[in-house]
Amino acid sequence: MGFHPTDSVVLVALHGPRGRFGGRLRVGIPSAQREWLPVAEQLAECLVEASERRGARPDGIVVFLCQDPAEGETGQSVMERLRPLAQWLRTACGSLDVPVYEALCISGGRFWSYCCPDSRCCPVEGTAMAMQGTSVMAAAAAYAGIQVRGSLRELEARLEPRTPMSAEQERALDTTASAMVPRILDQESREQVGAETLRLARRLMKRLGEKATLGVGWPEADAGDDRLISHDEAAAVILGLQDRDTRDRAAAWMEGQEADQALRLWRALSRRCVGPYMEHAAAPLALAGWVSWSIGDEPGARVALSLALRTDPEYVFARLLHQACNDGLDPESLRRCLRGERHASEGAAPAAAGDVPGGRTATPTQSSRSRSGTGRLPEKAVKRKVPRPGPSAPGAATPSRRRPAPSPGTVAGRGRTRTVGRGGGRRSSGDGR
Image (cartoon, rainbow, N blue to C red; front, side):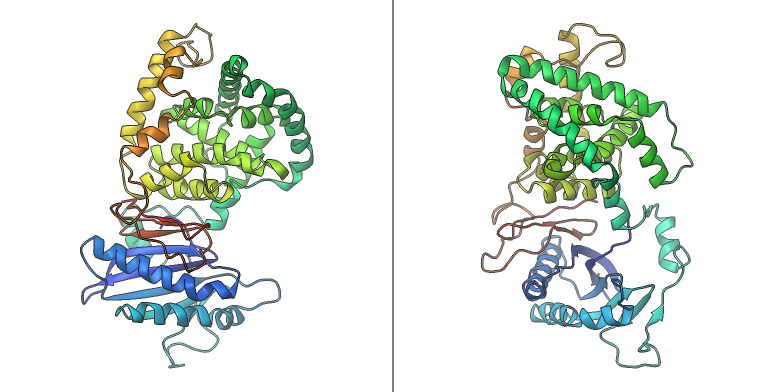
């Protein structure tokens, strides 16, 4: 999966007499127990249907419930608390004539079986997990080139708001919004705001690029990036990216050294979307997901795009990119589109040294406005490749209207991932191979 799941239900489909891995699915464990039964039924249907569409019904399924103990809780008490969820998952799979070979709870560095009653191999106190990186599976993953980037919680923490800076950052956002929003709403000044936003983002990328992060851990690297960006600068770029045309032009920073600098900037800006401005994080989160996908970091892309959709479930740019990434589409088609738009705009724009390589700026032009009008270039490009979710779309499951929707998460089938989102049980499927 590319990360260690936390607070997650993970289902893995197995095929053949040797248990070949097939589809795999991950979704956050719902906090409300009343959601467990409908979630279990939906997840079983998702995995079995997705496997059938890809040519083979699973011969069996393995279930993992991964959740660390809360304060005052033990791993064994977590296992007992999640037992009803494990049982509903087993019966949901069984009702589809696919047996659950094993259901395990992983908590506090130990694991328990919900299927094996033999205390000689599955003791009541659980079995200690092997040290990370020492198992046969870890060796096989390393041989296959699969890089584990830490836990899901750690990946999300790099993109979530930082409490220590929230008060000052919120004041800066308030002040900047009062001055910038009227200009964005005015058609004549909107393009000027976009150009200013891109120039400032460029300067911040250059500033970040001058600070090396090799050999530095994630927390230290992210804290260093945060110190390099003032609250006013962060507020100006965050609010400027709310204009979709500006956001689309920023998406062109997707390759080479530019991509690394842009990804660091989008992560830093996502951490600055605090208080009532948390919804504004959808733009930098979606850009972080797009750049991660463009450079081949699919797990990082899925995490960022999932957070963008958690922030704003209707954010079309993030939704289409998430589905395209999960469908295993080649991002090169979108990269070509963005390169063409960038070259066209740079060729028609006045020179401004330092804004882009060669001293040219990415100022919006009349040709780009007539092309889009609302700044939806990536959305249009992805739509050509991605079907709308629905009964007739290839790889899309029909949502059940009578069931409550589970918490946002991902479903993967042979590397495929499906979003299980809030709001009527909307689900979109994908491949992510």
